[in-house]
Image (cartoon, rainbow, N blue to C red; front, side):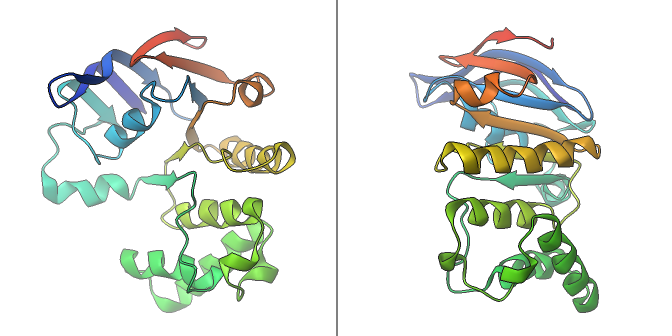
Length: 221
């Protein structure tokens, strides 16, 4: 589903964010990408959704060569992906439902279908009763669940999560991981970046460890 072939990413002349990274994440896997801050986790995720291009190497996502993909085909690639960030990036001047509706409009979803889907997803993350409230009135865990629902609006094949529990306490982090595991159980491929070693050790999932831009361990390779 996601393949890296000897990928390198350098910023400027000296900052080498990724070095000779080869990786094969199979359809339906739940993979933790871990390592200390600055190890290259966020860079790796950004390469997958073509927010960055590698300095060297090739990347395949669902059979598409991301590196050689024409610019006009990038939106189609991104429609296969859902992305969750640590800071949620919700619009605080919109309601919870309106945050999802922004995505529906960008996708060109018909109004009736958009309302149906928003209701379904908010029910899935346990926040239908909060649909008309501002995200600012929600807890950190609830805001992250809104972000997950938003990431699912395009029915992604792959969900990328960059430190989605980084701002949450242990109990709320467990709730978010439980929700992601449920999505994975339905067949979604999930790649979750985190520096939280305790969180990873509790989950018994494949773990890829980055250090100084290199893959130094992979218990599922």
